[in-house]
Amino acid sequence: MTTDLALAIGVMITVGLLAGLLAGKLRFPRVTGYIIVGILLSPSVLNLVPRATIDDLGIITFIALGIVAYLIGGSLHLESIRRVGRSIAWITPFQSLGAWLIVTLVIAFLAPLTLNIPNMTSPQSYFPMALVLGAMACATAPAAVMAIVREYKAKGSFTSTLLAVVALDDAIAVIAFAIALGIAQPLVNGAGGVSLYQILAVPALDIGQSIGIGAAFGFALIYLAKLVKTRALLLVMVLGIVMLCVGVTSVLGISLIMANMVIGFVVANRGKEGEPFVAVEGIEEIVFAVFFVLAGMHFDASVMGTAGILALLIVAGRFTGKYFGTRLGAKISHSPDTVKKYLGFALLPKAGVTLGLALLAKSIFPGFGTILFNGVLASVIINELVAPPLVKYAIFKAGEVEGATKPIPAAQ
Image (cartoon, rainbow, N blue to C red; front, side, top):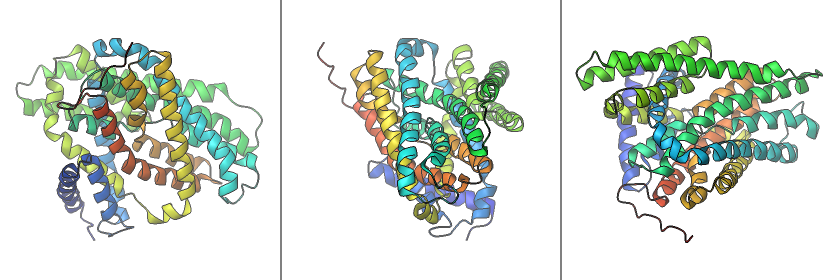
């Protein structure tokens, strides 16, 4: 059992990278290998890393999410967004709200028939839980998508659309979750009214603060980057700014993902072309390896037994909502056939933001919070194993991987 933090991180990096290489040999994304190794190291399987050590490593998750968000923001060039702006404007709300609607309906109607939760005796009492779970289903994990895009060096309009939609998904999820809480809490507590301030003004303020802080750090990074002359020092500068942003957003209780995406976006569109992102390329694979191995280490075998049915309902409803919502949005916006056919497969990963919202819901709803969190955790594990190969499939079918066969344009 590895209790020393340095030893645990060493094991995670070394074994994780080896598993990633093996996954690549088997034609799976390296992310899949990282997650499987994390599951094997977890207390529920080989018990090589105890739960207390995993909890102590939690800061790594926040730093890794900050770096990933920075990279995603850096991929959002205004010129590329303008080319696919119509697609993004229609696809993003349809696939996010589609997942919210379908997950809510599936759980509201099927959970009373398949689950036996104490203190929830009527079908109506399942609706608040269903609404909150549906809101969380809006989010897409940026880390998994970015890791696979970077691994295969995917570029093109499909990839630009994918990264833009993923970037906006988390903002929508935070807003949707706040709205769901504003409706669910009065229903659970027996109160009569729903506060518009709580469901609209509070999330809008949080998002606004995140954007403002991210923009300030972004312009600061542009200025400070002019003072360094080597790529190594530029890497130090970028990591320092990202960690500062993670710390500030954590203290203020606002979205670290949104803020760091804004940093990347500002630097990419107002700073020196490419260099602040090229500097990070040397460490990004280590960041991905540690992040996903650590995600896999949260696996709990008992979760799969106690909340497996709820997890399957979440996974099925979310896939249905995102896939068909994407197709509908792509059809309305007259997006290319590749976007219409394959983008829905690339929007399935979920992890950090979803688990963070689930932990919050667990503390707010003592009646069903535990089963809700366990179901979300189990669904995250299922998604993080199944979704990465589907993201790879989507970008290859879109023909935006170097050396991949280009898709044949549809007849006009």
